[in-house]
Image (cartoon, rainbow, N blue to C red; front, side, top):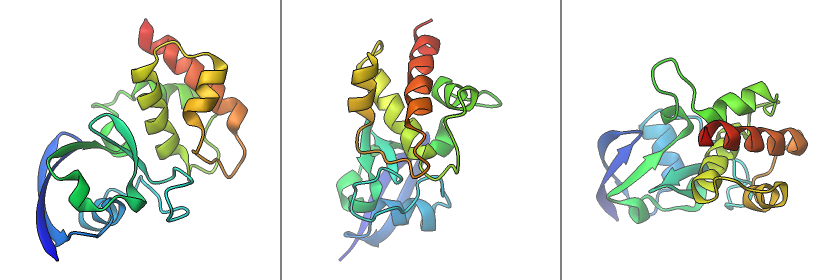
Length: 156
């Protein structure tokens, strides 16, 4: 069944007419050209497709676009402003927490949601908050360090 959804994506209002059960990931990648969210497992388990919907981490590969009507969505492409990276992006870069880059968009968005909820997480809270975001290169120690660094950047 076709529907029309209204979304605010990276600060821009969008109206999309599409099948109601089509995934948000497909709409973002195919209709909007936003390819930062990646298709990984297709089951919402790996986190490569993560985006922020109204500030919460959502796995876009298993989210029907009909479920995000009238919401605000942020993708990795919407984080930097002008020439300035978001503090979490800076921290990932500074700590070398991006290897192949496949998981990076989802990791960064998950870290942002975590830090919005808990501005001063312990390492254990970082591990728990990032749980479910899979790094194929096994860069977890650097990711934890990057999230810790981002927390410092964001609080001060």
